[in-house]
Amino acid sequence: RLDEALVLWREIYTGWMASDGVAHQDTIVAGLNLAISLGKLGREDEAITLMRDQVLPASRKSMGPDHEYTLRLNQSLAASLSQKPDRTRDDVLEAEIIMQAVVQRQRRVFGPTHQVTRNSEAALSRVRAKLART
Image 1 (cartoon, helix red, strand yellow):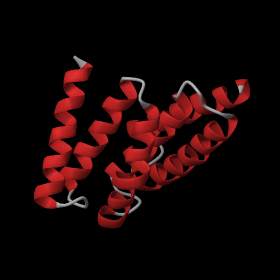
Image 2 (cartoon, rainbow, N blue to C red; image 1 turned 90 degrees about the horizontal axis):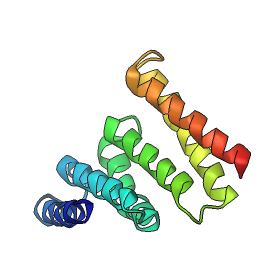
Image 3 (cartoon, rainbow, N blue to C red; image 1 turned 30 degrees about the vertical axis):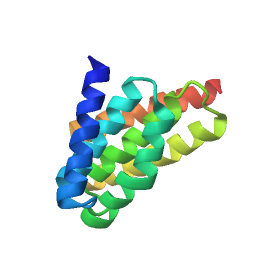
Image 4 (spheres, rainbow, N blue to C red; image 1 turned 135 degrees about the vertical axis):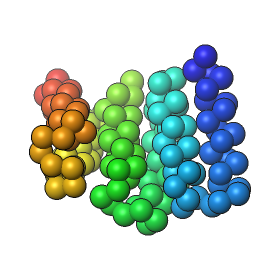
């Protein structure tokens, strides 16, 4: 079913880009969902490229670095970097840097006790544990 979802998310993302442009919030959300689907299918390299080259720059530009979707995209990028099978120590280090920035922004935007912040802190801990093993 994930393969079917991937096809649908790709169509949705392409459709939103064609109709409203890459910087529209609906396009960014579809791009995030596409990247997550790619990651779930073990296609982290493709997800990383999509986020780095298209979706994340558009989100930063149109919604800003503190927007929920920009933060989620950064978190997804960090997850893809740290979870890809052929990850290097540099990949995990980059994931840690990204997650540190996400947690810092979320503490400021949502507060230190918000569940989103706590979830990101847990994700940062997992990245650090991987870094210790790499």
